Length: 348
Ligand code: AMP
Ligand code: MG
Image 1 (cartoon, rainbow, N blue to C red):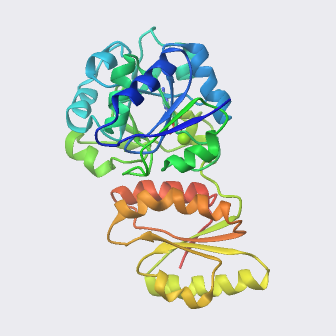
Image 2: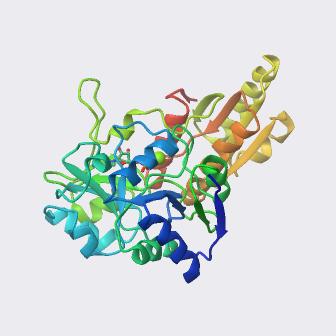
């Protein structure tokens, strides 16, 4: 399939490009588009065969349900059986934005969207292109991240191009995404609100509005409530070691690990903070990627997936990554880093 990559204005999206995107979506085809979190791979959520194309293009396991994107409350109403008070509060405070709400679904949605679950995951994105595209289409849009399954989520049009070229008719490209991490997935279908996936809205932010919020602890015996969480997402090809500690200790230990890696003839990539990076230059890692300042987790979040992708593209065999404090957005950053490293964490 011929893939068209159209550059679209992220603030005032061009009407003819939105029309073209909407036409493909209404015709049951896939369109990749930017959101404030990561790029989405969209399909008409009410069309089972359009949604099946998402699984095919991504190589996504069939039991991993899709997040449905809406542009207004009325559209969400048509998909939700009932709104709990917690769900209402979330809508008031966090929509549009990087929060996905898991709620009881109506029968309007095909089974494939929710992978047979009784609940549906819904989000109203804040990115003008995403909102206007859904509006123009007039349909709820199922859209997981627009990457091949197992790769980091795409945070730029170039990432989508590399993963989806030849598989979909249209990519709307407006450069890099602001948040750079996926949305928080919150179960507000009843009982204590439960975070199924940490993301762009932190537990602390949710607790301010909702009071008690719990985090779903994946268990060995029970199926996870968010089926996607059981897969080893975002994993680079090389071995990855995640390091936690003060900048001084990180500098020392990374220096040693770079040397050890080189002695084993490994190409070594480093993902670290602005505070650590200058002290590692003279150790000559093959890739030294600055994620951002330790004082600005938003910066680290927005650069993380680019860094992970670069490690793969440049063929790093060993990746040394510096962790962040698990607080606020840091919790979501650490969740993605831990998944990428397969839980290989060194506390130093
Ligand atoms: P992605 O769209 O690739 O960022 O992944 C969507 C995430 O939301 C996955 O972890 C899914 O398992 C989760 N999810 C989607 N729909 C539901 C649902 N109905 N119930 C629980 N989790 C869901
Ligand atoms: Mg994804």
